[in-house]
Image (tube, rainbow, N blue to C red; front, top):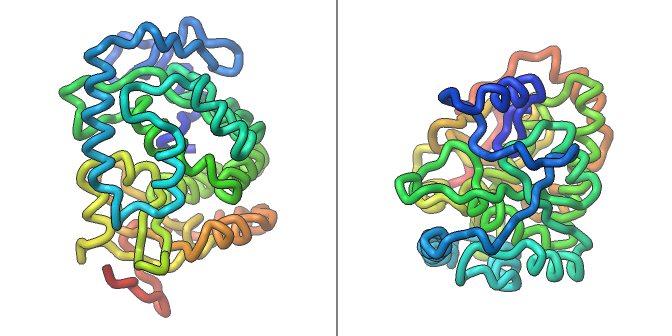
Length: 293
């Protein structure tokens, strides 16, 4: 599964084995247990790191009104994470009461099997390290800011949280069916870069956008990308960009739609779509409408 959340098992072990080489995984995996869980050690964060978190948080907070979906804004407010890098144990109290989820600290990217098992059991992996000031605007691997600020607020929403649990269960099944590449596209175009139609217009729910400085505005107002109504099979077939703003955004009508449309068994999808050529990221199919910004 080639997504921001995981790394393939083979690539993972190769990168960990060559941690000193360029391109190796960023985190320290030496203290991780068999599920790739570590202690957060919140007391070890420096004041400089907390100050950088506050700077990142305030920048993104100013971008949310009129752009982020209300469910995200409400969830973020409930987490009380503005003053510094959050203590996962405290966040878990709010998550447990709302949806039964909990955060687990991980060194960084983790293998697919471990990632799916965590999601299937209502555990969301959050990286423990924070980017450097030089990486303020762009970071290659997801850090604690991306994982917490971008993903955790919506885990307070029962429908979205249940979707994430089912996604984890689906991932474990997809590993046996050769469907990981397709399932990664679903995660990318929804959990990371999804848009939702609200009564006030298009809003963002994707973590990759909401934790980004520039794409928050671009995805809603630019006339360059396509904005296409969400369709499961269409998304499973569509390639995505990892090194630029997205060329296509998929739009759901509600989190209930996302939950309902992804509830069926994906086995027939994998069999059918696996025989087709993937669609380029900038494809607009006949009969599809490009939703105006």
